[in-house]
Image (cartoon, rainbow, N blue to C red; front, top):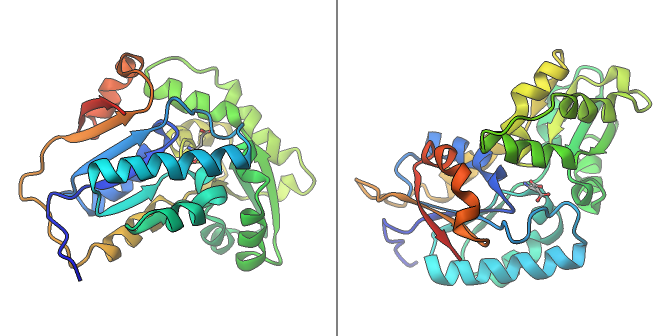
Length: 267
Ligand code: DGL
């Protein structure tokens, strides 16, 4: 078994800033981990792309990134990429890959009514992967699905300090509650990593709803996979990579520095 160097980073990958919701949970349990966070801004949004586009783009990009940054572990902090391309990525890389998929299992344990909601991207909510999560973890429950691409833009805008019309959040929740059985909905899965970044706003639009996401489970999994490994005593600054121009992330710098992501690079 090869020894993992203590400076080897954890590599987070998303189409944009959404992966920060996963990074937050991971930093809480692995505070010494060096981080490389990749936002594929040249490809954002993933939610409107086809399965073929995602399956071609994500493994190829991750192949380049792994070669360049030699991470000990890759986390695809994007439900859209994972529900479509997780197996392709795992087949293409020789490092462990942790995926982010809609937290239907925890939602099935939290619901009282047996009616669960799923907010995700258009690409995620139509995936067979989601049908399987439903069949495996909540077979006797109703799963209402709603694609809420507006929430991706809202989360991006919020992290840039830009104003967002609160009607966006009310519309997203109405997309679930207006469906048949929607009045019984008590637990909503935030099935896109951008959405926990606007959870407070969603809660304001639906005060009695319980929201769940997969970040804590991913953090536990990453702790487990790295449990015998060492970390640097004094980690270097963390790295943020964009596939777009660096100048286009200027307004994100305050949010990124809150996560220690101060070394900004373009791929
Ligand atoms: N953050 C991504 C997800 O978890 C997708 C956002 C997008 O690019 O549409 O699905």
